[in-house]
Image 1: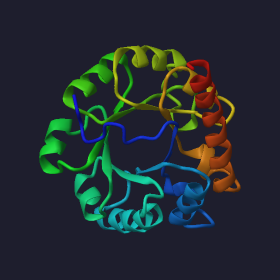
Image 2: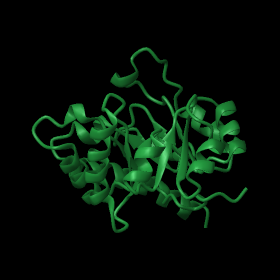
Image 3: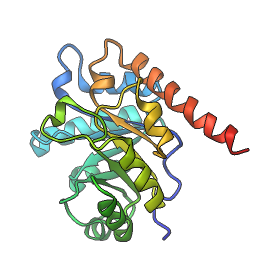
Image 4: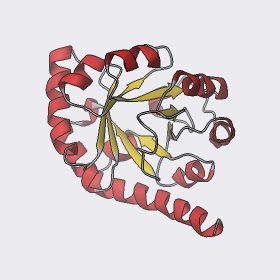
Length: 222
C-alpha cells in the first residue's frame, strides 16, 4: 500500500516526545530547539493536560523550531491543533480515532499509530498508518504499571509488517543499540533528552549510538 508517509522517516529516526513538566528553568520550546540542534528528526507534541488554546500556542512555538526541514512535527491525537499549527502529522493512540477517519479529515497529514503488539501493528498497517510507535520496550518511570515487552516485540513486528516503526519506553543511549538491532527505524524518547543537563548533547549521544548500529547493518549487508 502506498501511503503519504512512505519513505518519509529517515533511518535512523530520533523522535522527541514532549513533556512540559521538564521545562522548569527553560521553556519547552527552548529545550526542543536544543534537541533539534543535536539531531532530533521528529518532535511529537504530547501534552494531554493542556487546554486547546494553550496547546495550540505551544504547537506554534515548536513548529517554528522544526520549520524549514529541521525536523518533522506531529501532534498527539489533536487533528485540529495539528492543522492549525501546520504540523506534519498526528500520532494516534491504539484506541484513538481510526486512521481512515483522520485521513478523510486531513488527507495530507502523516499518521502514526501507537501499538503494543504484533496484532496491533498488523491492524494499523491494514488501516493505512504511515508509521508505528511501539512500546513499552524497557522499564520506564512514565509507565510504572506496565510490564516492558523487551526488544523481542520489535523483532516480531519487524517480521510482520513493512511499516517503519519507532521504539518507545525507557530507551537511552545505553540500550538504543538493542532497539536498532531488533529492526526498528529509530526510537522515541522523553526523559533521555528532556531530563538531561544539555538536551543537545543528549540528542547527539543518542543519534550517534543509533547511527553506529545502522551503519553496521549497511556494511554487513554489502
